[in-house]
Length: 223
Image 1 (cartoon, rainbow, N blue to C red):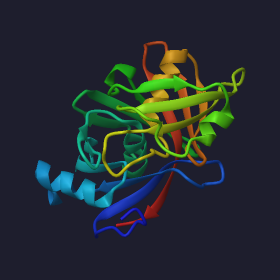
Image 2 (cartoon, rainbow, N blue to C red):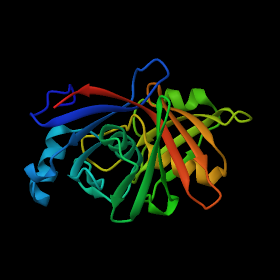
Image 3 (cartoon, rainbow, N blue to C red):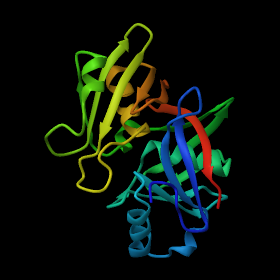
């Protein structure tokens, strides 16, 4: 169902679109989470949709959401929260790990979170952009891998690709806010990341140890 042939009642967004509005990571959003009331039904839908993540909105006013990959539930991740914040037009999202604040700034939607909320990921620096772009699939190994190289170190511009390596239907993640946050924290600076085929992710550190992740969101399919 990655061609956006989705059941009724589900919005499909593209999150972290490029400057021309292209690319971005597809996100399914179930506005009324009550339609899928239990763990099994939610996981089955996420698996059926096949997106890297699907969000179930349990309380649209308080911003209570539940995030699923095709195979598991996630406590915190970037692109679903940026997408949900944009779609619901709210300033706080409630997660088990804590409250995530959100804001709109022109064409960009930003969320604020903590790197320690992000599930473990391996960040692997490559010597050149060409090496990152030459990959034809996930490198050998297990566990979530984020490969990156400097495109312009002085300007904070990065070329990256993401490989969940979870054994599910998602071989490569087009745009990954959580991994971008981890990389920004590891480098201690703001970044402008081009990921996947041409998605754009922005990051910015704050004095209190939190990090902002921002990008463009477009509606692909309305429920």
